[in-house]
Image (cartoon, rainbow, N blue to C red; front, side):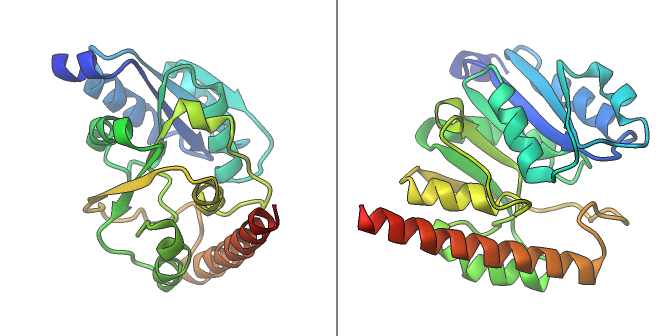
Length: 227
């Protein structure tokens, strides 16, 4: 950890929550343990939870409460509040292994965005995203919100398409010419009631995100060509 502390100037870990009162304290505790000796903060952006998540978030350094707009907007809001040069975003449900934070933080030295990609994608819609948006952005797991960002580029990012589960950010980054790389990990078993919804609902929402992101890419690319 001393080596990591010397290498990294500081890490802001940002997570978006919606009814995560059980898993959030565990996540914060694990982040503290893994980043002991490294300057860090935990930023929680709560999407108007109704289960006591705000009470559970007291162990975080920064807590932001906002109206429910979706995970993508929530994460970006937290990223813009982060104070350290390296920003790591992750889910609060413990499906993103906290021990990978160090790996992502080290890789960001040579990139603007580093995506932690699952080695296998469970949903058909995610596989379609991989061979469409993913091929353009050179990222396997388009909808992974487990990422590292350089703080310097965060102010340039925006979200206009509503909930795209992070795909819009990758599209904008690609068109801007930012350096995007990825690392791979074996995902744990998904929780019984995922935030995105059941199989049918999840596939529909993801496919909608794919369509919106593809349209955005074409629009931005044509606009850039015109200029």
